[in-house]
Amino acid sequence: MSDWRYRVAEHRSTLLAALVFVAMFAIYVGNHSAGFSANVVQTAANKGVLLAFLAIAQTFVVLTSGIDLSVGAMFILTNCLASWIVVGSAAMTALGVAGVLLAGLVCGAVNGAIVIFGRLQPIVATIASGAVYFGIALALRPNPGGDVSSDLADMLTGQLWGGIPASLVVLFAVILAIWLPFRRSSLGRAVYAVGSSEVAAYMSGVATRRAKFAAYTLSGLFAAMGGLMLTFFTYSGEASSANAATYTLNSIAAVVLGGVSLFGGTGSAVGAIFGALIFRTINDLLFVFDLDPLWQPLFLGIVLLISVCIGSVRLLRIRNRLDLFG
Image: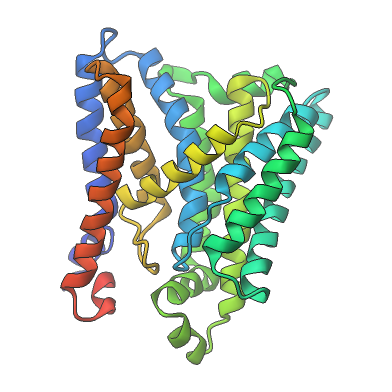
């Protein structure tokens, strides 16, 4: 197989997700009363970026063949924390941002430690830790409120030259700075190996514990980035259990729509981003076509069910799981 054909096959799911998103977004703006305008694109981007960060956080864990049900709680916790400490002078704001990201890293590391050393199933471990994280968020913000540095918030959520959404640029920069180096590193390859077959990876000398710990820690970091962006969008913090649960489930849906296998070992954070954008665009299309809000959860559930079934059928059709990578 030639190099370009191999590359296309390797990133087939990501390319398909990108094409689906472009087609759906074209339908959305074509039927929107404002058409393809800078404000429409910015609004869609800001909503999509929040879910994209959570989808990336979920991707790291799913690649190891696990599911993190605490990403929504970490998202809300860091949102509440940011509404307390990302204020003041430029130096204080920078320290606050660092503190929020550190909190996300710590939460993710705790999840990894529980799963690895406690030998618990990821779903069980993250349900428990998520309840703790949400409890801390509720202690920080029993009532919605707080504040955030308006200058930083405006810079990261507004429009750049040419009407380009700043939030998309932030997301793109994070992918270049963190995901791409991770994907090409030995640690990144170890995460994929663990998801493909943890036993085989261990027998091959892969540091499986280190790989899983890194995956959970990075998951917490990206959930914290999402929490920061939520604070910049809303200028406040809120310990909302509904938002925590919704974003957790939507992150799983985005991962599936982006071509990341729930069985682990295959997929990409870039695909998960397009999956998040697809999921958000589905919501926008339901709004544009004026579907009864009572029917929207049912429709979204059907979309998620079909996506999971398609992924399962693909796995059942192959004789060797290595075919997923060829």
